[in-house]
Length: 532
Figure 1 (spheres, rainbow, N blue to C red):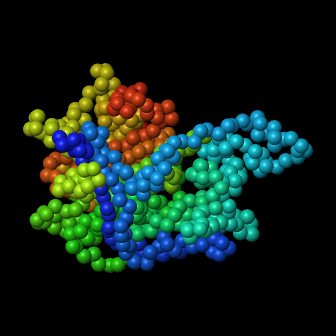
Figure 2: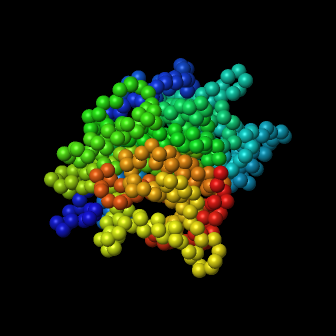
Figure 3: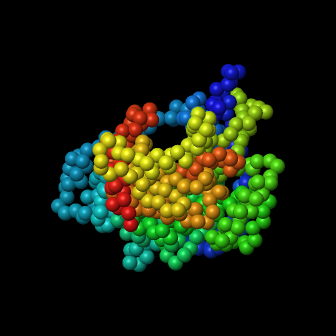
């Protein structure tokens, strides 16, 4: 039972203290100028390491199982928490600033006979600027807002070529951003002209020094893999981002080839990390593995795991995708950290040394993965019925009858091939939720062969195109994966959880009570109507 409560009266938790190596699979060095710093050209060289990356003494992360296992686990990044511990009273939100459109404009008009449009923007309250930055579809508006938010370096025609950076007393490079909320809001607006997007957020290095350690490039389908060294996900996590020469702010522009690239980097990094842990040598230096090489590596990993005397240090995957960006005028950022399409992934350790009261114990706790909650249900169902939960779930889906008992549309299936099924769950946990399930007993991507991986990628792309066709602008997508050493019939499951404007979640959802306004069969029909 995963819980922090013990009969001895001490909370049980654990701490991750990662040291690890990262194989550099990136083939190209795309060194470019980000702007200037102290009058000198500032390059993005630190984003393109020449060799493998060694991460020593990464941030310590505490992992605390919830009292109630169904509530998951809490992760505390120690540098963030240590800084707050020096002044705990700083834990507060600032009071909203006074806002008066009338007073601002009245002050601006006083004593003016003529005024430019740009100066009118200068007088607007920040809340109005933020609202415009998020909702305006006029590039002219957004260019003015971008210039208010940061300092640009421009060419002779006034087109931005980079930003103006500075160096603080500690030698750290700082971006010349004058208004961070406005900068984020306007940079993530699809209607901002591309040269401004490139300078502000898209060019490698514009968002920081995270190393690019992988790349997938096929014509105009280009994806980078960034390393997040000191992550809130212990042992580092990785992000597959659409590259700056493949701009994808809208799901409608995301092709199946793009999805293949994003997912290829996930499969590749997972297999390469496991290979290193098992002593499997990978030849070829800095280059991406082909689909055939990836499959051969997967099979060798499976063979080594089957004969291993001890379980591997990492025994589960973590994968997720926050799609879509929004920023309220009240400065509440909604959903993703940025609009350019990106997916995140990591590996989870099998177990971590447990602690009580700040001291290590001889006990170990399993690390948390959301797929473990599914595993608990699989075991409980089998104990009760001596049957496979997922086999019976598929039977229920195929034999489904309408919830309201009428003779209307009855199918929950949106898309299906020989490997996977995309369907509407009978009990949706988000307005418009879809789920993707393997039809074969495949519980994680280590058990997924090349055909299964291709089907997963295709169905995932189909799901997002369907939801995008219905108007979805924000969603969270998560993977429920089986542990590598688990021999049960737990299947690999993905949940697509859109966020609708009038359903942000409230006390009902916090109780795990999900409120819907449609029958699941009718939503399945609406989805099938939007199939590409």
